[in-house]
Image (cartoon, rainbow, N blue to C red):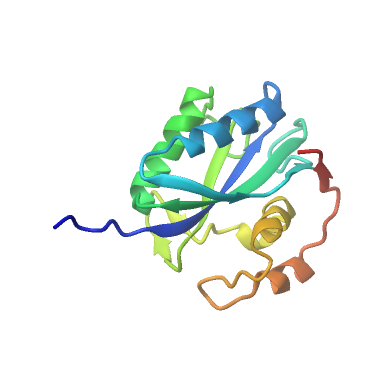
Amino acid sequence: MASKLSVSLAYVALGSNLDKPRQQVERGLQALTDLPATRLRARSGWYQSEAVGPGPQPDYINGVVLLETALTPEALIGHLQQIETAQGRERRVRWAARTLDLDILLYGDRVIATEQLQIPHPRLGERNFVLYPLADISPDLILPNGTPLASLLRRCPRGGLRRVRS
């Protein structure tokens, strides 16, 4: 008798502000659909936002996807980092401009705090470029700590965030 794989829902943020950002996030999205033991369940629209980080940087293109995956959180972050590297991501300066950034925002109702991985993403509630795309695909989402996504949205102004044509 074959054992059934344990499947979880994971929300992953995509962002880019270098080397044709729209093409970078589209390629990243395609790479996510090619992950083993993983299926794309939903994706947000793309959003343009001002960069958060050191010095002047180009604007970002951001979005969020919902994956159904049998990968563990640790295996998933490993795959995400491989995708980033394959698309030219360099990790020299924190929050510097990048070709592709892939972050696990949520993984089921798990709370993980290790050196390699923090889930929910520690700045999820502060970032309009994460919250609004997340609301596109799961407006009624409740975070593992019981906080409704809607309450985070009320406290996080849209600012210069704008939706771009998908």
